Image 1 (cartoon, helix red, strand yellow):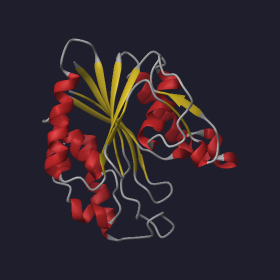
Image 2 (cartoon, one colour; image 1 turned 120 degrees about the vertical axis):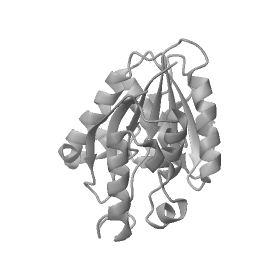
Image 3 (cartoon, rainbow, N blue to C red; image 1 turned 180 degrees about the horizontal axis):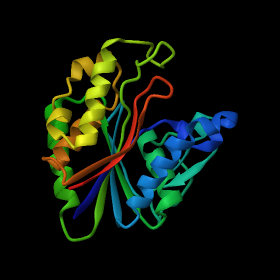
Length: 237
């Protein structure tokens, strides 16, 4: 049974060990993300969705490490996870595992990575399939979307500056704050690709999984500290 749908961004800078002396610059973001994890700690399972290069599913038995980002911080996706940490684990799973380890260590996390360039119809199909998975019985489950906004919001942003990104990012932020699934569904794949809004496919999956406006929607963090849109919040179906 789906009890909550939450969203957090995907930057490795959430991990304090990776930020060095700049750790205090992301304290507010990090605390908002960890508070989402605490809010979801009553769910027995998190179904996580992110958008990366290729589609894949990561089971709750997996372990990973942020070694590829500079520091060997290990994470696991469930209480029974075992084996050597995978240095190539999807970033979506790494971030979800890092949150799980610190806020809900008894929770099982299954991660579905959708291709960032997946078309809207495929995202809608995946969202409907995930909703059936979430609601298959009375076990409390949460959806956690790990996705960023545009990466072209300032001249120093990773994707440089694209003036079109400001309006799209504002539209995304407003939709997340209002629980407006129709606006999320209407995000244009081509424009999002141009402005490097790499989380677009994950936002489409979120909209399809909910299917309609949630009963309540709350955003606890919405900013672009490095020229990338980061949003943290939780919806109640």
